[in-house]
Length: 216
Image (cartoon, rainbow, N blue to C red; front, side):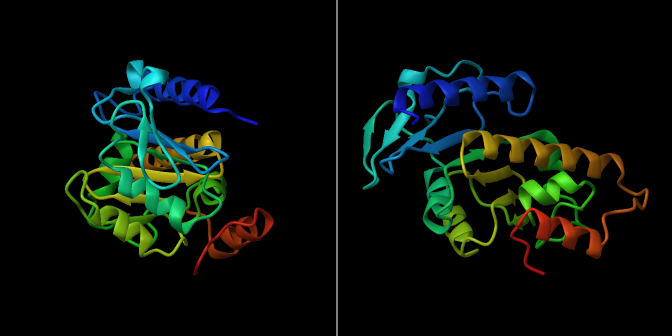
């Protein structure tokens, strides 16, 4: 059983690791995690992953009321949309990671499947990644766009902004986010080289073996 205090510490530790590895910078990015009673712990608005104070992490009760900590991220609607539409969601990670943002603005990217199948692990951990259009930071319409996916995607890429990934718990969401950024990097490294991607049958085998949600 993970209590609120230990979860606060875990969020701060993971956030610092992401910052130290250059996966987000400044005061960008946000993380949320769901507690057993349905409450959410959310990184505060304007905070940096470099030095998060666990005691200042926001707590939102199951009715959506802010009950402790600093004011939550302005992207709260984006996080809530994943919790509302995917019952298995235990955590959400949103970054402004360099390679993912660069990928989000390339004209040839397929909006319905933004991440080329370069590795088996990107398929396993992410399924298909939906590219969503540009929204002003904090715009509740981002949450509406995720809600409109009806729980069919665990990861989205916001154009000109960055990736958002939902996972069964905080570690799963973090690992999937790291996989998304690494695959975006590989995509940019091989751009224009006509790389051999996993074919339809290979993807199908991964989807069946690892029970991946993958709508053709």
